[in-house]
Image (cartoon, rainbow over all chains, first blue to last red; front, side):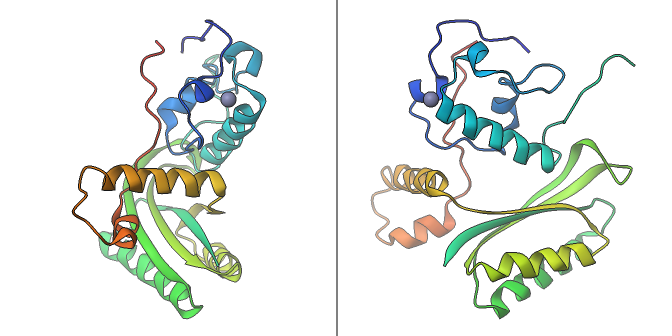
Length: 75
Length: 137
Ligand SMILES: [Zn+2]
């Protein structure tokens, strides 16, 4: 996964996205590390409101095994 | 009355007939308690992101319904009782989801302006994510 280090503008605000869908795993993965951790908002530029929605969406997706909790590459 | 969606991961070893039976049983539970089924969606067999009960695959089904808050509780006790259910999630549509759904319905209606029944459009509208983010890479 490529970390997005551009201008610190919230991508969801920019594209007028109101609802973050937990079923869209490809989109959610762009806000996670390779290990499956949620990227902090100062890395992605996501605003507080959307970061909260995003992390809730990722947690729902994890519960339904759409996204991993952790991906350990060390073994 | 609120709109809920219940997503269930079933054992992928079930036969299609078994899965239909589960869907029918859940539909009956919802309807018996005054709920209205809006949409039933079989996502199909998917690889799980991590093993659940030593299983790598699961069969996902989603039921969208309208009803009172008692129905999720009844469904939950049914899920807990059933051995075939690996995982479930029932959630209530919040204001964002409802707005996204209405926008999607409106966008679907705009090109095909000939459809007068707005409710029918909402009911038949397939789940489209209002997320189109490809330009960032
Ligand atoms: Zn934002």
